[in-house]
Length: 371
Ligand code: FES
Ligand SMILES: [Fe+2]
Image (cartoon, rainbow, N blue to C red; front, side, top):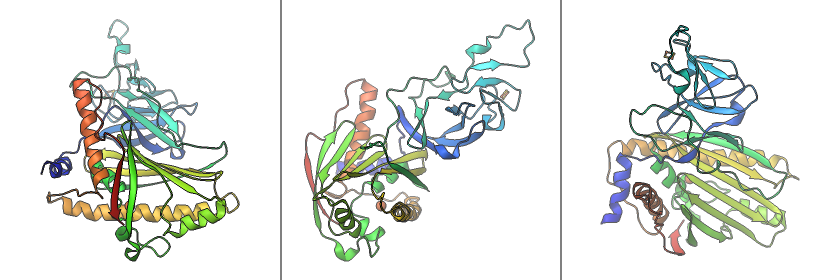
């Protein structure tokens, strides 16, 4: 049964994909002229903002003797290592000064780089581009050019509200992601009187289609058995509410709900911190509920509850996974998880061979499950 092999292999050695943007820190927690630590894909980073407020990200290890740079001095422009005082430009990582050099010593200081990473602020997050790794032991050069800009939440009007929440989970990126796209855990993990319970389980059918680097749950009318959607329909005076959910590599789930002139969008990422740890960040934007200012607070509470239920579940799951159990993915409920593994494999294969990525889905697919 070759299909059952994939997650098993992935669980013990989770590959983290390079060549993508990753969320590092909430932007409102990063202040000017200060240094912060973060870890992405097992890479230690020092993150900050220069005196103009521009964010930057550097590898948190001095290229001289490995001292963490976050322990150094930052003047809003250059970062000075706390060990021997080498100074680096925070945006390109280039060495500016080596205090121990005498006037007649001709070491080319500007050829030395501390690793620095492209960094962008988007929808209240600082995103860092993690490039493909260079040859081992090659040292650092100027930062590499990202292939595109950091992902953005889709917005449909100029005025909107934004909120985020995050949670860390002691599981690999793969378990984090397939947990996120899993339709069958809802009635068991997310039970609540105002949402759904195991008694409301019924058969569902959803259409999926391939999109570049991912797949889409085609625009549909959300399940009518949950109170929030009933309320929304009433409030928006819309005859129809449509939801579109996309997943794209390496870790992005976007959901867009539109009801008449109102909209709600979210961009959720599961970020690999280390091989066995990931973090979920949900950022939502909306133009709904302007008449009911208490609703966003309520919604955040609801979302936080969901995320906490997922986090708690994965914390427990991690205990089970310690013993390397045999795992399986079943049709149709786990088909999105299978697509994820196949997409990942196809991406890696296309990088290895330099050929175009072969999408695992050849066309639209209808999946059925009970939840
Ligand atoms: S370790 Fe950083 S300057 Fe020596
Ligand atoms: Fe969940």
